[in-house]
Amino acid sequence: MNTSQQYDTIISKCEDIFTKKTKDYGTAWRILRTSSLTDQIFIKAQRIRTLEDKGVNKVGESIEDEFIGIINYCIMAIIQLELKDETNLELETEIASSLYMKYFLEAKKLMEMKNHDYGEAWRDMRVSSFTDLILMKLLRVKQIEDNKGSTIISEGIDANYYDMINYAVFALIQMSEAKK
Figure 1 (cartoon, helix red, strand yellow):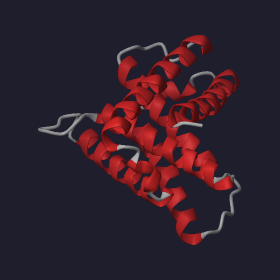
Figure 2 (cartoon, rainbow, N blue to C red):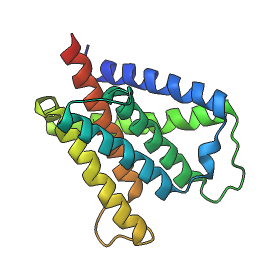
Figure 3 (cartoon, rainbow, N blue to C red):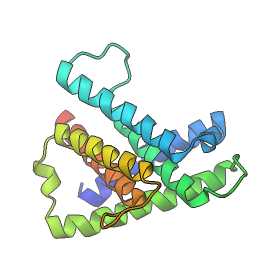
């Protein structure tokens, strides 16, 4: 498979989980501020790093599950950035899924442009580097959030979420290839 097909496989898996959880829980996550979603992503990335460093998993959720969680929380955060002024917390499953796919496809489009320019350099990286890059992006997002969204020269919060989505997708692709 090529990168685009591998990416689509990851989209399908993540979207399936997102949709099923939306059917189970509704869009209760809409009550969260983006800073709370950032912290949820941080928890998942920190757990991945701990598992990578210690090599022991006592909870049972896999590193793959955590990368999927990072992707889904990042997309929720992007949705929250768009809908921030709306008071309606509950979205119909179809609307939530439509927004989810809109932003996942935006992330894929960004990946394809960067992949062209960087020549798929990510394929020679380690999964642990993706974890570290996600943690670095989270620290950047937290700083931007602490600055009330203001930046002088840097890209905004949404760009960092998109990068985290793509780093997590790359990690999942590499992990799936390692299993083969």
